[in-house]
Length: 113
Length: 116
Image 1 (cartoon, rainbow over the protein chains, first blue to last red):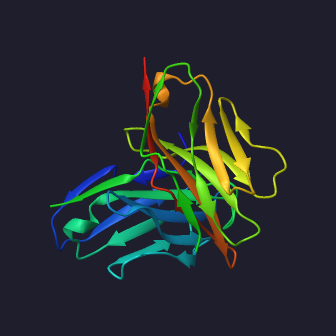
Image 2: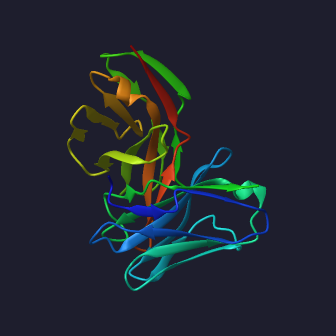
């Protein structure tokens, strides 16, 4: 158990809908990262937050947004969902923005039908 | 931009044999870090081992060791005495740091199958 908690584990929704994925980092970790794993794109970095502030942005679509709350949990919001958004979404956390360790949660498997 | 290449899409190994998973990287940054992760069929990403570019010794964690050859830009993962439970996807990743923020750039992965 990495200590990073993601909910839900599985999510099935229809095209055009909006969903929210939740991540609780390991105790003491201030930095949260979101990654998307799809069959065609592999593992791709989406966005990073540190202590509530956005620190880095990757290949995140405009339909996607994220935030980190004062209690350090983070949410990834995906809207106007398309079939191609079906993927495994991972959250990872580390103590500092640039760290030698990054522990991943179990992921949320999103299926858009 | 940083790039990670894993040239072995799949590997088949007999139980108890040692296995080497290849990883080469490309970066112009003098300071970088290399990670290996294991992803079993259940989907979670399990952190295995880390090597910093300035580390003098190759990293080891139990049965895992990293064969770091800086001049060749390679960071191969060695698993000694393989077990059936080692069957999984393995990803090599490089840490990219820009303005104090970190992201991991992943390779395409190698699917390792351990045969009894």
